Length: 209
Ligand SMILES: [Zn+2]
Image (cartoon, rainbow, N blue to C red; front, side):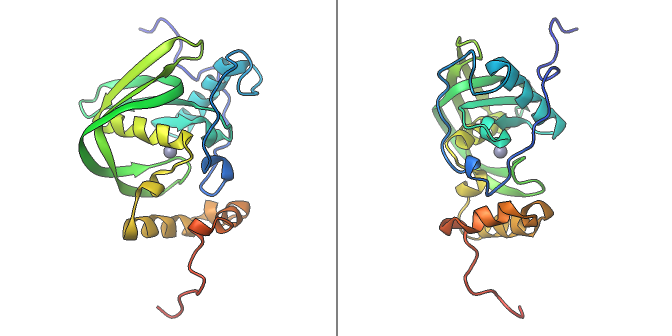
């Protein structure tokens, strides 16, 4: 039995931002106006609802504001830890205040890179502090897969994707897979990424191999 509706039930499905769109690759702004932020009809509460609705509709376990094109420090989550305990909530202006324990390389994906997954190193424990949509302090502690989620979402708000945490062949393989997807190949996203010198494909195309 639930005393209140699931988060997201009044939210509206928003379009996801995908790899290469500038909003994903730059740090988000701190939320200062809790009534009208972040320029969203209905204010911050409606925005959090939209994040939940969009995360659920796409089968995600977390979603950051810039993944629906909004440059604001907000994320939502509905994520199990390694003991199968479910964690549901949102954080406004989150700060990763602790990240420790062993570093585990585990499979990680992202709704902004659909269909791609790569072994990504993350700390086994993470603590995030921030406030809720009304401005009340929140502290969220996670271990295992949930700690991974918290680090992934905090990274998003700093303009960092999990592929930025990869090095060498893992990174080039993931980006190569992304470039082959239909969503990447369709139009502006590919151009946006190609315009970033850090992500530019090799100048001389490989031929015959
Ligand atoms: Zn993500």
